[in-house]
Amino acid sequence: MFKRRKPLTLIQMVCEVFWPSMGWKRALIYAKHRLLRIADTTHSIALGLAIGLGTSFSPLLGTHFIQAGILALVMRGNAFSAMMGTFFGSPITFPFIWWASLSLGQFLFGVFGFEVAAEIPDQVSMSVMWNNFKGLFLPWMLGGYILMFTVIPPAYFMYFYLVRAAKKAKARAKALRQEKRKEERLRVTEQKVL
Image 1 (cartoon, rainbow, N blue to C red):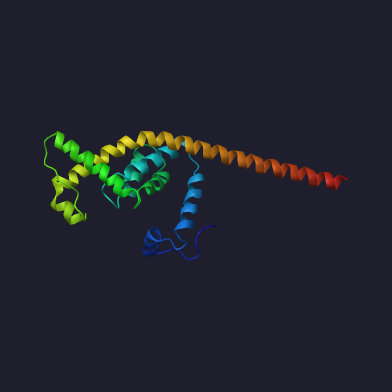
Image 2: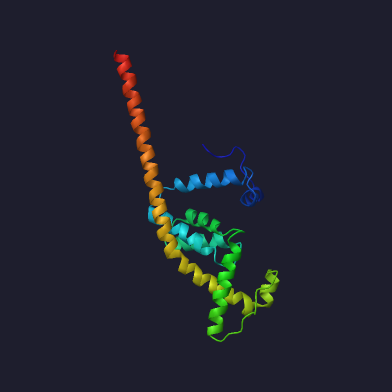
């Protein structure tokens, strides 16, 4: 009933992920509405969002959706909300996330006596990270995953209360709409009787 007349090809679907044809603003509004309409428990939705936020600390760009989905399934969270939670990682937040992850990883490597890179290179690419695997990539990975599992519990509680409040507001709005419809029906029947 709500499907496209002409289904998208695989290439078109991939393009839609990176550049939505409806525009970013409308796509984000649509995602928000989809998130509020998830028919799942508050716990599951909040856990999924927290997992998504946590996976943003992973240095493995391009795999955040996959990691969030798998972790959500393992931890019995909502996979869709986990993928929505990965949007915490953005060009604005990534520099701070990466700095925190790499700093923590380098500190821990230094404590255990392993060799680390002296500083973050000006341009980070896969070849730079691969050439400096032990000094840059491994500390970054260690720090990222420690921060990921450190951030998930407080994010869960924050999202739990936000999702619960949103569900209560939605239920109140639904009850008000039903009450108005009931009053309207009563008024119409009274007018017919008179």
